[in-house]
Length: 128
Image 1 (cartoon, rainbow, N blue to C red):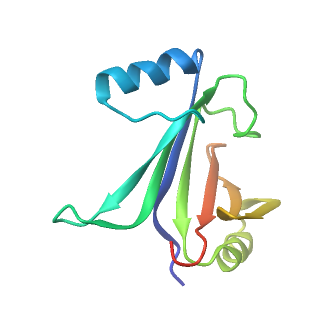
Image 2: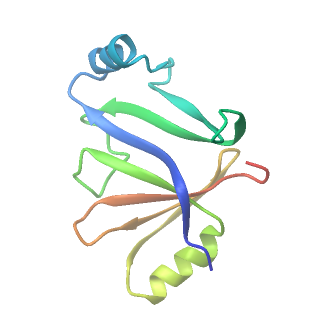
């Protein structure tokens, strides 16, 4: 079974997300959108667009989306078969959160690594 196939997103907290988003936009040219981040479109070696994106987003420091982790970041990893991977991780004794989410954006599940960091696992919708 394939496990992680890529990085789907990088999310981190900021004391002042509005100011930090503006800094990244002004100084690094990141096209920060109203929702607080951007989606980088993938490209092949020749620069031609291919299916897939990596999300980059800054949220408020007091947000609880990363809970139970207290880390100021969370990495979202793309996976091919979320249900099978979550089952394998449970069988291996990993701390897999019971909650999963299935939406128009795909299927999501979470595992806590040995350092207490929440890791998001994402199975994109068909064709993405």
